[in-house]
Image (cartoon, rainbow, N blue to C red; front, side, top):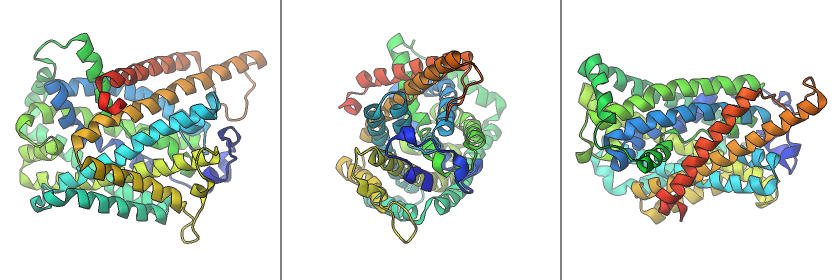
Length: 441
């Protein structure tokens, strides 16, 4: 953590080698924190997507999964190039100027605030499967959960990561248990028979194809978290970040498409609570015991997704504070655990206010969500392309053996694939600007 806070006021001055850091979070702990955000999307995305595209939900998740894999390559590189952290703030400032870094930071903050609010709220809604009497107190319990998460963050990132790792392990085991239960219950043939249902029905228009693709990015939110963890990774980041991202891709690629497919085709989502589909799928395949277990593990993981968002928020606050866009007081650390208490408390207070203003409406929060997420993805992708292009041009001028400080080296195929990834992400963002007017507003 020290590296992220002792860097200079400009991100361009923060490329100090990560070797100065002591032992940090290894690939598994980094995976746990990132999965605690990305892995939760499957609990609410199928229901939200089904309300918009019906049985085609899994089709769009599958299409977006391809872009997600390409994005993991870029975000892994951001973690390597900028070990001081800051994510989109740092890469934006390096590629252009501090103002671009500010824009990127504001976009990702919108994403983090809504992630914290939406995930904690969804977690408490899942908990009502086990305790229906809690339905009337969901908003109050969500606020309480966010306050407890703030306390956990005040204790420090190491303790935070270990607790998150346990929760993430329980959740991935639970998701895999549902997949296995469905395969046993309906058989391989029945499971495969669900695929035609995802592509059947009325013909999808070109506009519907683009809007569905853009909306499905909700299933893969949380990827930015890896770049915010860069200062706390076990050095060298060049090894830790790709391994953590590989674990993320492996787990998400297995769980998200299959659970979305089966929860929207084997069940009758029209008559079910869209926020409890995975739990209901577990009950459909293996009975009430698995249904309750999935609800409990989903509630835990969703609450810890809020934790991941708050970690990301206060790291962005620190980066913007070093750039003097936010007060320097946000960098103040306490003597108790040496954590930036004002940044953490601010990162927690805003999602609490969002919950109270929206009165715990998942639909409203979901509609607003994609604006910041895809905006930050777009800024990161385009700015990393600029950095890569500039670096390649420098190498051509000085010879291929020349390496500037912080350079990674980019082959032509990697650069081209990166540009294609940027185009796909920017297309999704600009589509949502029109398709989701509430989010844009």
